[in-house]
Length: 507
Image (spheres, rainbow, N blue to C red):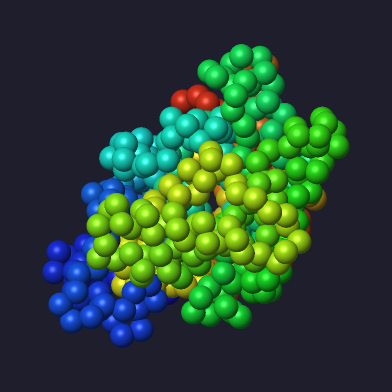
């Protein structure tokens, strides 16, 4: 879906007459549920008020980016007018909410308007607006997300650490697909193919364990750490729109994520002793529908690629039932799934805290399944990639939205090269093939309590930026790679401050 088509779709969705009603959603090949004549697609366990708030946020953010190309086209058409600079800046302020760089506008009379630079600047400025406005734009749905810190503690977890694939389609996995409330106790870091770095994740686990053992966590002595790996697949186009890191092979994606979970737990137990390892959970996401495939641990905490249930089927089976009856069906489905498997993973029921979490994940995801039914006609129009930019380094925590960006989580370019190569390949097709540059934000966090931490984060950003430009010299030489650097304070108020010497005004 190109930018013009995306904008058209959003305008159509913004019209009250165009928002899909439950009856209109009845398409013959509906992937989540085939609706009969006169039926309503409204599940008893769905939080429709939360869905409305999430959609309002999605529409607000997407329109912020979708307007860019049309505005730049209008500005380009006036670049030879006498009052061009004033017109351009006024149009940008009115339509996009920010100013354009004066120098680029002033130089337009020499060799024409540098639309490549302006496009990336607009992407970065829209990104910055989304970060700055996140607190107010997200407040409604954050207050209603069901899986908050108190709930997680009731399941026995002080920390839930989620490693989805870095694919843009999973960048809303926490708040939208899983309905976790973002916060310090819920960490989301994406890696290509969900192949998280074992050593780095051991350090994350150790940091949280130190806080638990030091008494920094309330009731920490009785709580555990949960590691979740999230792979993805496409039910409508499994051979073309699955996980690029695994060549759209769903079995490889599942097995690789499962193996990485075991590697982490084994490494921790070999280092810190038997029983020290975290609980682990494996989840698959059908990115066409945002439906889940939840793999269940047994009594020993061991997972199986063959022991799972799927929420799309639960939605179909429980639509029209009362809340109590639907919850009973979910519990029965989970109980049946616990008895599945290949016989090699041991036996026994998962512990009650994990069961409570799994049941809650299944119920919460029903709201997301219906969200896609109501607001995206049951299956996303773009089942593949449609990201706006790449984030390299560390994720900007306030950004929570599907297909908004591709994330290459890394500390150095050397270790993150495979993830970055996947992102560049995606954007070569999305942008560079059409003459648009690839916008790359290099972003790192710093700890204000540590002397010169901010300076080191900026220096790291510059090193990674230089390494990116050196790795992709053809794109850089053709002006099709535009990088910016930004830093944020971990746990503080500074969010996404651009470094001025990279051509983007600081804030």
